[in-house]
Image (cartoon, chains in turn orange, yellow):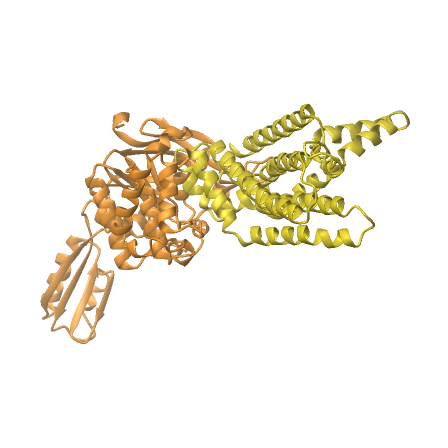
Length: 338
Length: 261
């Protein structure tokens, strides 16, 4: 366990059960969650829809109360309002008062964060420029697009320069340029010494910018650690391509390969280990072919995610889309009768 | 500062909502037609004008408290604007109190605008403007503080429609508490249980009848400084209203403080 003073977030055996009424159906959203997020890191929080990511974030933001266990922000219980002084929070698909302009909105949130008027004005102006919203500073929020709201949501979260920024799906609904901007903001926050904890469905972003990740499955943390330790660089597939092979292929390769196919010019072979790749190479050359490429493929974040969550089945297709990932959960595990 | 920020934002929300202006327009219309109703009545034009004017102010202030107040908390939850507020270093009671004070300020401004129109119209029509009117308007405002707290209480626990229904029931039932206790006293001997139930209702519902001194204000027209009720009664009613409001806000806080969003 890391030194607790070095942790921005710490949870101990956090559990969350919804509707724990006498006759109501209960849903277990989180169970025995233990998290440690070091200061100054970018922490990616992954999981299928319904895995418990938003519940965790709401507990950290003081919006929900864990039914068991405890959570701390910089050593302060998340139920203590002082913990939220250190927190900047953006919910998923942030909603704001439709009748406020961007400038009024940032001023309002600045007041709630205890900022004085000159600082509020200065920060609001700088953030609106930084997020490309200066031209719309006097426009009511009802006229804002989803992307503009998302950027404004991020602006209100970081306005008071909190040491910890918690973002729920910050890339959701953004175009590639918007995503790039959010990624850059997250990186700049880390460069300024702030800690960023965010949930996302976009695994390439996690690979690009996160120092550590936690994968949540059915309310349990199934993997946690630095990206480098999770993605070991082990070769999981090798793709070979050879020319000079007839269209019917090399029959000896069929039992060895995961897949073979001919595109009219090149003959392609996919095998699942480096040893098999060497054998396949020999067989191709023996059949009169010329090896054109041999590309090893290491495990990506997405493949790692699918492996640890066991999401390769029916739920996997939905887990990064809009479908109900709850289908991956067994009824016995997610719902119990009181 | 947090409470003030939330209160001012709530006030801003209300004044940018069309419903406030619709209610103000109808209130103004009712005040203006009061003279015409006085003309078609037998004598006492000034009294009828004063009576209708005070009633219009009471009724439309009540509507503002009920229709704006009952949606206040629910709307924040439904539109998820509450997420970004409660994630700031704000206590939950800051939020509730801020919403309440914002609505109370809206009610005050609404009442002051209608009162200014009413008094100006009385002056134009050369009808007497007395201190008693000030007393009646003050107690109307105290009554609205209570009604607003009722609206916030229900809004913190249920949907806008249910909150509006419950608050309207309390608003009208509160006017009848005097008759409820009188009826309870009559039934005490013949039906002891009915008497107890009625007395319990009298204790639970706010005694809004206390704040209704409109009839006394209408009759107090002999002297500009004549009071509708003595000052000590005015203070007692005010203290009762504030105490009831505090109790309701405390109850709303107890409902709200452990709620998950």
